[in-house]
Amino acid sequence: MRSLKYLVPLLTASLILSTHTHVPAATAAEIRIDTRIDQGLQWLVSLQSTSGQAYFRDPSSPSGTVNVAQTGIAATALVMYDKTHSSDRYDIQIKNSLNFILSMQNTTRGDFACFFDTRTGQGVSGEEMYYLNAYILEALAFSAFQLRIARSSTRDTAYYDTVISSVQACFDRLQKTYQESDGGWYYRYPGGDRDAELDANGMTLTALLYTATYLQLWGDQSKAAQYREWAENTKGWIMSTQGTDPGSWGYGGFYQNSRRDLQDVVANARGVFGLTTYLRLIDSLIDRSTAMSRKETIRSGLVLWEESFFREISDEFRGPHQARTGQGVTAYPKSTGAAAASMIAFVEIWVVHGDSKFLDWSKALYTWLTGENEGGVDLQSDARSGGAGFANGFTSPGVVDQEAGLEANALAVSALLYGNWIDIPELRHTSSVLTVLLAVLILVLTYRRFSCRNLRR
Image 1 (cartoon, rainbow, N blue to C red):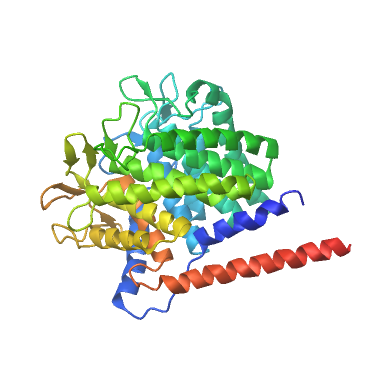
Image 2: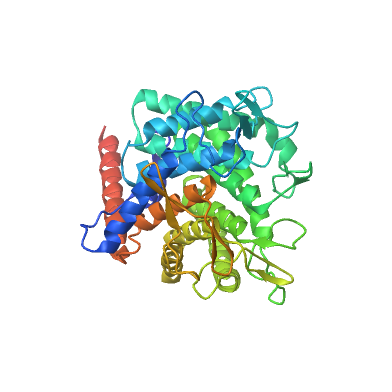
C-alpha cells in the first residue's frame, strides 16, 4: 500500500493522456482523421522488418543502415494508438520493436548502438554515448510506463520491468560521465564533439521522469528519488536555455546549446515536450506544495514561448518555419516533422495549462498538415502497402519534397492521435474535458471508499 498516495495524482495525469472520447461520426471531418490515423499506421507498420530483427526501415535512408532511435520513435506512435484507443492491436509490433532496441544495448557499458547494419546483423556504435541514446531511452521509458498502466498480467508487467531495468542500466552507468554540473547531458555528436543540445535533453528529461514515476509506483522508491533529482537538474538546464532578454533576437525561444546562436523549431518542440512531461508527472514524485512554484515557473515559460517565439516563427498559414537566428527567421525547409512535433507540444501545453490559444495552435497545425498551407497540398499522400504516408514538407516556396521519411511520419501519426484525442478537427473538445473530469471524480471517490474500508479493518 506504500504507493497508493501517489496513485491518484499519477492516474489523474495518465487518464488525461489516455482518455479518448469517441463521438459518433456525423461529419466528413470526424471520419477523415480516423481514416488518416489508420492509413498512417498501416504505412508505418509496412516498414517494419518481419524477418529477424524487427526494426523499422526508413525508405529515404541508405540501403543496409537502420537508425535504432527511429525505430523507437515509430514504436511510441504505436503505443499512443494502443493507449488512446484502449487497444492491443499493435502489441506484437511494439514488443518486437522494443526487443530489437534492447538487443542493441551494450551490457558492459550501458548505452545502445544507435545504428544497425542489416548486412552484418550487428549494431554499430562509437566509443562514447551517442546523442541518439536520448531518443532510445525516451522510447523505452515512455512505452514501458504507458503499457504497464494499461496491461495487468504478471507476464506483461514482468516484461515492462525488464525494459525499465535496461533504461536504469544506461542511466546508472553513464550519468556521472555525461550529466555535468549545470544539469545538461553532454552526448557525443557527429564529428566527435560532445555537447548539450536542447532536443536530446528534452528527450532525456522525459525518459528520466517516466523512469522515476515507474519506480515510484512499482519499484524501488529510493532509486525513483535519484532519477527525480537528475530530472530536476535536466529541467533546470532546459529552462536556462530560454531567451529572457526582451531586447534579444532569441526572446522567448529555447537556444539549441550554450553558443546561443540558433533556435530550431523541432528542438524547441522536444524541449517543450520534456517540460510538459514534468508538469504531468512531478506531483507524483514530490510534495504538491513544493511542486507548485516549480510548475508555475514552467507554465510562465511556456506562455512566453508561444507569445515571443512560435508566433514569430510561423508563416501566414500558421505553419512553422525551420529556425530562428540572429540574422532572422530561416524559412525552409518547412517540414512535416516540425509541424507535427509542434502540434504535439501545443496539445500538451493545452492539457497542462488550459488556455484555449494553445488548442487553437493545435488545430491550425493539423490543418496545415492536411492542406491549409502555402501550396494548398494535403501532405498525407504517399500511398503504399494499403496506407498513406506524409511527404517531408516544403523545400522552397510551394515546392513539396515528395519523399516520405520514417521519423516525420511517426511524428505525424502521433500528432494525429493527439489531435483525435482532443477531437480535432471536430471542435468538440468540451465533451472530452467533461469525460476526463468525470473519470477523475470517479477515481477519487473510489480511492476514498477504498481508504475508508481499510481504516475500518
